[in-house]
Image (cartoon, rainbow, N blue to C red; front, side, top):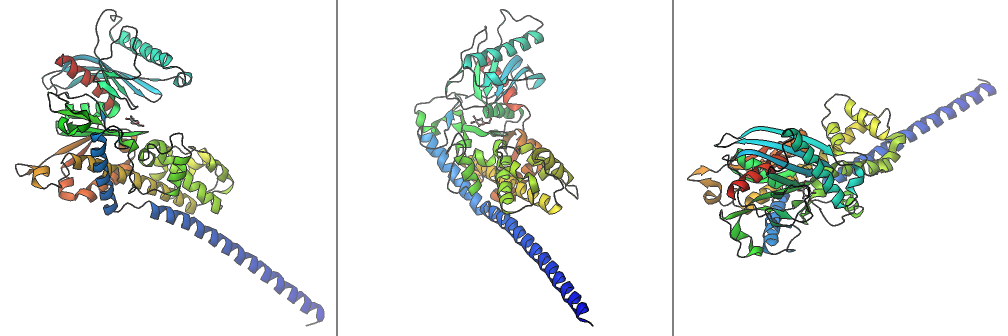
Length: 472
Ligand code: BGC
């Protein structure tokens, strides 16, 4: 081989080595970035774990806080508000009742026709109105004028213009905390235009009323939707902070405002802490921020944003992930439940909301994994909260025969449950039911029924108006 030939051969070898080195370097960098993704997800998963022993700690913490909240106002982050509801509908109510259900920016008006003598609900009609944006931040008078007008028009349509002069029984349910002074008075309300508020209740109280109307074994109600809350039937004498409270029935529904529950046993991650720090209600609604629909998508977004910071798996669209609340929980649920082999739905949703394109299957799988971790933790913690209530009222089977059974037979306990996370998100439901069994054990868990209540809060408010009108 001549000198020229040797030179070309050496040159080729150098180029080949350089290409090989570049490839190896690229592969190493990509491996390293992927390892960081796995690290972020692994750490998050580890911080979110909810083994049964931890759930039991949460159950016990819930019981302790319930006692503290019942002992004195401000005794716990759980407000344990009195509702003055000491009568529940039993199926004997009859007549036509109206209800208003004010849920955030949605106002629903309902007409419920009851047949009496156990014939249950003959008919019910619901209409929904979105509250105009300008009213949400306007004066309460403008807001309530709008609601009153919506109701008036609904009743006029229903009664063919026969409203003036006729007295209507109206239930009113709010998806906001209300400090009630009696069953028919709560703060904020100044009703005009000839309507009388017969009954003002917080939304889970309506859910409990309708739950009890349908099934007399219902002892508690839980809302798990955009916000979360629970209420339950408490013995009057256990409500220490209201000494001397006498109710004919011997019980009262307590609105726990459980979204504000807090315990150091809750598995909190750096993402939860950041979410709370940046929220307008810092240090409040801690439990709600881990389990409700308003926040689950946002927790996922925060984890994905961190992943985008340490890797390039989301490509150019990573900056969209820095926008708070861009990933709403219904989208997160749809991605989580995508069972197509190539995760098409995940790709489509991310493309639409984050403008990603051509995401790898590996990246989509990571997204699903994060959704799973967030939802599983939420559902299991919500289950622990429910068992906490059952434990407080002796229905968790821990007191043996006395608490879990009547005359040797296991006692059936029903919890009415309402809103999207439980009703529309099947993975959430699966994880929640699984956790109930994990905590209680199969034998006791089979007597605990989580019963879905559709539109319970609104219908329940009408039922309470009916129950109280027959009491007067
Ligand atoms: C509110 C509760 C309400 C719950 C469910 C929470 O954010 O504090 O009063 O019952 O949402 O709507």
